[in-house]
Picture 1 (cartoon, rainbow, N blue to C red):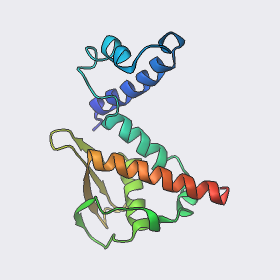
Picture 2 (cartoon, one colour):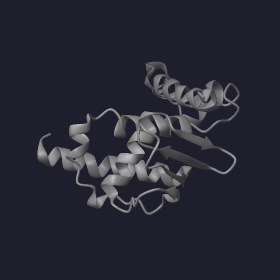
Picture 3 (cartoon, rainbow, N blue to C red):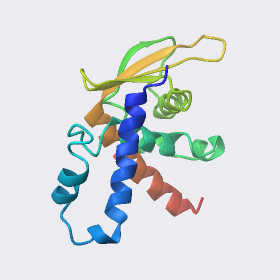
Amino acid sequence: MTDWNLISKGLLGIYWIMECNRIENADRTLIDVYSKQFASKWNNERLLNSGVLMMSSYLLFVYPQQADFENIDFTEIDISNFKIISQESDHADNKKFCRRLRNSISHAHFAVDETRNIINFKDNRPDGTDKIEFEIGLVEFGEFIDDFAHIVNSQMLKSDI
């Protein structure tokens, strides 16, 4: 089921970028722009929110082709903040775990729970076997995405991929 609230939050991030890019806002403070044009319309929603976070994760995990994803050195990627709820096979290997995260994001098999401030991910093979379910806090996922982006970008720039 589509989480339209998540999509709305992602749009808030896009609208914010567009508004900041307008020349007439060049000399205005962030607080001024936000309070006059966003706060009341968006119920004081934070600009860096779960919708923006999931858009970023899609760009980092799904947009790269599978072959490019396979070229990443996952040894530097820290997956320790993810809590595995259940799994039918071992996913302690960073690369295997990140592939399952990629699948979950690409097939939209995740749910944002704003009351608990977590994201729950699920994945399984097409035949329904090898199921895994895991979760992470929203803040921790933001930190993971940021670290992942820096590590992978650095690797790709070094290798000229």
